[in-house]
Length: 218
Image (cartoon, rainbow, N blue to C red; front, side):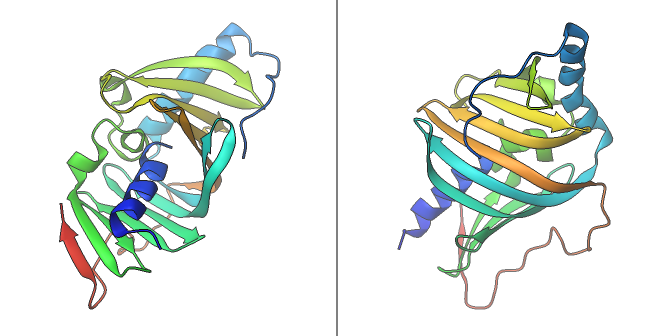
């Protein structure tokens, strides 16, 4: 069994530094469509206050999948989200706007961090934080591929630990997010059944440690 710290690092990396690598490019979009692709991220951030759906996630090294998981998510900007891993084990990340809770069910352990510290300058901050993405990232459109409008975001801070994030949008909603870190790893998220501005239960972003759980403040 993994230690609590290594499992936390694995899930945190998979979540924060967000199918196989696509082989071969399809014909590029014309220039005006590429410009629209750059706007797809800005429009999503400015017009979508909340969303929910399911995800699959793969960690790739040298083009090979070394870890995979799946689950469901919901978010409400700014800073409220629920990221629930259901396969291959059960783990939960909840941000309530002030704190980030990581719950490992197998270990019955909860790790608590300040949300601002946990999300600052990360890919998660783009989807779940404020809409001012260009304060921390340089954003540009990429040629279209597989019917997706593609956008690249490069962190302005070179010490973030990752090099670039690539998003793929279809119909104004995110379909893919892929993150490349400084060590050659890629984390690819695919989002499914995304619903914009759903009606969410009042306790969606509330977390109470289960009875007997070991709570660690960081």
